[in-house]
Length: 159
Image 1 (cartoon, one colour):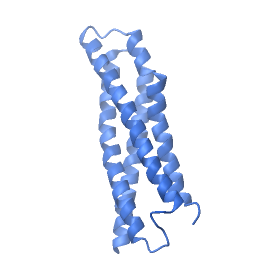
Image 2 (cartoon, one colour):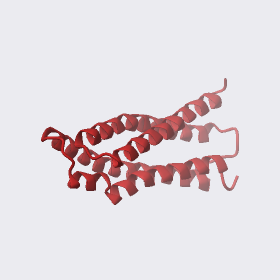
Image 3 (cartoon, one colour):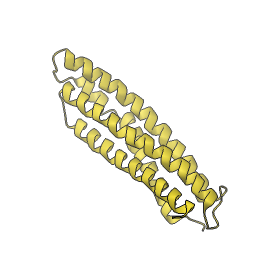
Image 4 (cartoon, one colour):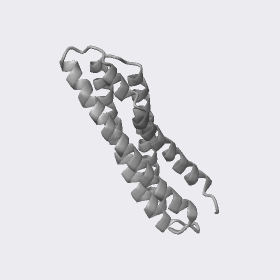
């Protein structure tokens, strides 16, 4: 296998980890939206943290090996191509959105854990935090931006 083939393999491994982790996190979040007990919400948000590990490792692999691929590409790609610049910018937008949404969810998990230890009774405050429109927009918006990056990588407009 050539260097390019190895780089492509590692880049795609990162992409699959990123997308797989994102799907798992979204599924767990959707499940949490249907729960009222703080202990269940705490558990589900805790499991999301495991998916975030896959997202972070996948993001690092996808970015590092993706940039290296541009350098090694046997095609006429360059760092100044619009679709590559757009993908890099969108990558950092998605990362920022996911990070901010994740910090908000960590605070929600902390509240869920406190309420779980105090009797595990449903709480309207916790329910509001789990269903917070800004947190949901940041988390799901980050996923949509990742899908936009995927579209750019497949379509490669301008080439």
